Image 1: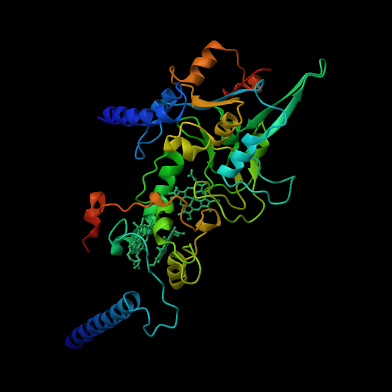
Image 2: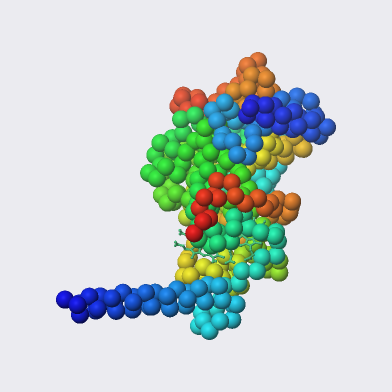
Length: 243
Length: 152
């Protein structure tokens, strides 16, 4: 019965997507159609595939889009301002070849942040999204120290004018949520991926790693990719290509 | 013996009398016309949007905190995003059309909490204004699983 409903919803979403977005993306929409009263499940594992060879060195559209979507504001303190996503430049010291890539929470399967969290505020949702439950975060920042990617920020200031979809407040830690509100809505994409496509780079692809028919799973199967700090065996949900 | 009995009887009558008076007094405050002889500013519970709340009013008065706190954990951890008890949805309906807020002296949530001496920190993170795209507001038909709780 729930399968029927899901199929039905999926068909509706696909029909809408078919008119709006390029073909191929439909499959992701299909997989993401979950009705609001259904809990997330391990059937999905959301992730990103980032092709750094397509990422333009002087472009930061993903960063602005992320911070716009989630109401991450500049509090005038560059050393401590929250960064949910940032551009880093990597350079090969011998050849001098350098290129840039966006870095955010890698949504690990075994997240060190969750391991060290004393209250259980850092956790991994069944569908692979690593989040902070700010309702139980005490602001101790152990997770920030444990994260090998330095992907988390602490809020030092009183925040106003938050987005309805992204509550934020002083004294808690936060990081990329993989646009969880968009994912749950069935948008089938994230703000950063959308912005990158709009800029014409298409360096960021969002999708379900568990769905063999999704574009992301197909590309991971047929093209070379890697995890950052693969030596740590964290099985990240964000994968990289092109370096 | 008998006068102990009489004493007990008088005492129980007194207790009942006091209880009745107190009950009426509280009822007068809670259900008063808003200008009663209260020394504390009365809560302002005007709601511009929607015809009725997500549960009958008397249930909401007593149980709204349970509903939203339960919903909070469901949404955070299981990604369940039903509208009925969503905090966003409360704010969408209950924000004052003038101030666009549920806070402030006459704000729906704050005025009653001030009256009842309740303080919540929810709006240090959550926006107190309705969402921009307004199609989001949704009332839900009463009843469902909570019907059994309504009988007093």
